Image 1 (tube, rainbow, N blue to C red):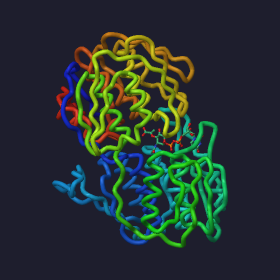
Image 2 (cartoon, rainbow, N blue to C red; image 1 turned 90 degrees about the vertical axis):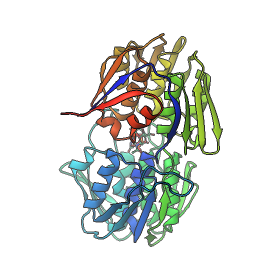
Image 3 (cartoon, helix red, strand yellow; image 1 turned 120 degrees about the vertical axis):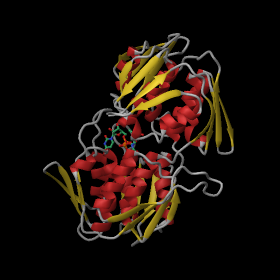
Length: 434
Ligand code: EPU
């Protein structure tokens, strides 16, 4: 397992290219299972989670081909070549445990398989570092469209007699809307008979991106990006070309990297509209954020103010940036309060940040952060993707050397993070496992 060695204390300065969104690309790749003919996806990041999803749809009968990286793709420089996907065999309907256990987003094939092939066997995703992550809302939504479910040997087995049938349904749960649950039901409803109305739908940009691609494939969808999505089912979807939206979480992480190192970064090809709550909180902390077309300039004053922040569904502050903001608030001038409402147990970074000299106390779903003048380098352990990103941020500013073990968690969701950071002045190296 690889590690990162970070010698903290350098000011980051320069330009970083933001990759396509992991959380948009994963369900979109799964949705291509429903299309006839070839779909070409652009700006798909090169990440281990994307490799797992490609492997999964490969097992489900898709031919997947990644083109070489172009030097430049029109006015949108791209790190990666496009990804072509074409379904060539519809016999297999099973997402095996071996893949599902490495990537929970495998659940995204459930709706597309039921809608297109009438059957789906998906291993039940187990527990996860950020807490219990049930899939009951996915199943309930698909049941309302007429799918029948049973559990068998650790698998969810779903079947459809004839065609799924549209209906009006409420999709929310105890913690609010579900992002991938909304996408699963949206995909299935695109091929269902008649009209489906999803009330309490997630409004995240990743849901909108998936809906936009389905529309290009021939789906009839209105209201995506609002809590009520209307879908008029069609009988087939045709392969298309689609560019994945920029990764708002990667962008937010680098905005915080600029702030925590008292640096100045130009983040290219991103969309500040998707980060409005993040901008709001960071500006209160004292981060200067300016937009110029598709570029964000982020820099910070030396003094970091304290804030209160609660994670919420979009357009609120995203849970996927909670850990990174907390790393920044460790250096705030006083006490900050962070409450996690989406995944109340998502605090694995707290213990590791405290090992680096942070002063964070957890009380239920809330963390109370007493700012300190300095963090110190230490050996820490990456536990989940975003917690690990928070440790990288802390390492960038800590005095001395920080060693982060198990960085495979970071490789799941941040494309070439050490190269991107090194290019703007960070002293970071990957130590390969011998
Ligand atoms: N929930 C249920 N039942 C369900 C589904 C969700 O109770 O059937 C609960 C969850 O336990 C949670 C809340 O609803 O409390 C919201 O979860 P959601 O379903 O929205 O999460 P998700 O769709 O499984 C995606 C992202 C996560 C991100 C969340 C919230 C992908 C691949 N994953 O997960 O991203 O944290 O939305 O925005 O899109 C990450 O990238 O690090 C990551 C974890």
